[in-house]
Every structure is written in structure tokens, then in C-alpha cells.
Length: 229
Image 1 (cartoon, one colour):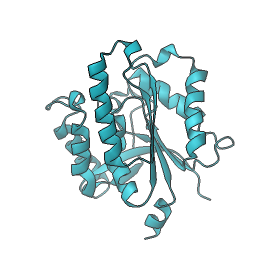
Image 2: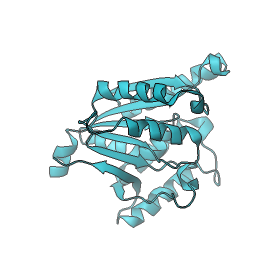
Image 3: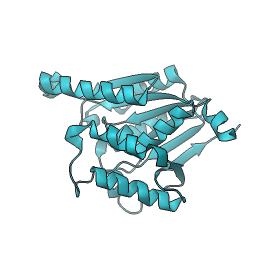
Image 4: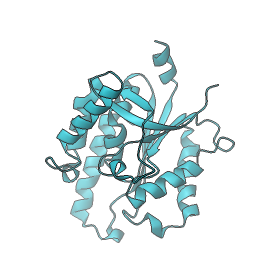
């Protein structure tokens, strides 16, 4: 009961380099925190636009998927920077930091969930570094916890000595089915096993993380910072 009371005060911001990262990395935890009364916010960094060469029909279908995902999670607000996918290295780092900082200042989250610092995808690395610049305590004192999430097909490819070693586990046993269904909304991003982002692989990872913390299914995170007042 004490844990539930504390979570109800949380304003949780999940930051995804690309749509689907939020579901893969923290979908079950977000559903759980929402049920416990937390306010959820989603900041997505890259997306399809005509200037990046995407067809209007493709963009429309993708927007419908995002609207559906947003509604299923019941985010208090969804922010989309719509920057160039696989092209974040083309933006000045200061510009990206400023865009993210503006959103964080508006929300004033107590918890921030971001990609792992050493994910293999360049977009993930760039986003992680930019977000960390926006979590300095003297500039953003309301942020009390910073977590890195585990994203299939990205995090497991981090090279030595930077492999993902989780130290926070969230029991998502009651939420695994809803997480799977949410991932299926991203039709073009899911395929049959042995594709990394498959339903089978998602369940296997959840089972494995559950075995590490004595529950049926879990999501794992790496704690970067926690301030207890």
C-alpha cells in the first residue's frame, strides 16, 4: 500500500527514439504505473514526414497506429518531435537537447525512462546522451529517478564492456498480454521468430527477467539516478 501511494504521485516520462521503443522497453511497467495512478507522458523523437521521403498513405497509416497506442496507454500527453529517423546525427546536439529540455520543463516529470546509453542504434545513443543532459539536478530538480530501458534488437547488441546489466525489475505478470497486444499494433515492426521483435521473443525476455526477480514476467531497467527526499 505504501508503494501504491508513492506511485500515485509520479509523473512518468518515457522517451522513445522511434515509435515502438516505448512499448518494447517499458510497456508493461507503464500499464502498471497507470493502474496505480501515475500520470504518463510520451516523448517520441523521430517519425515519418514527407520531407524524409515517406508517402502520404504510409504516414497516415502510421499516425493511426500512434493514435491507437497513445489511447491504449492513456498518456496524459503525447509529444512528437518528428525528427529524421536514422538521421539524428545530422542535427546539432545543442538543438536536440533544447527540444527535449523544453518538453521536460513543461511536464516536470518525477521519473524519466530513456533508451540504454549503449544501444547499437545511433539514434538511441544520441537520444540517451541528449536526455542525460536534461536530467541535471540543479536545472531539473523535480526529476527524482532516471531509468534506462531494455529494447529488443538494440540493447542486447551492446558490446563489451558496456553490456546491459539490469538492477531494477518490475513485475508485469498481469500486464504481459496487454503488452503483447500493444506491440502487435506496430504491424510492420513485428515478425515471426527468430526475428528479434517477435511475440515469442518478447515473452521469452519477460519470462527470463521474471526468473531473475521471482515472478512470472518482468521488465528490467538500469537505474542511473534516484533521489530520495
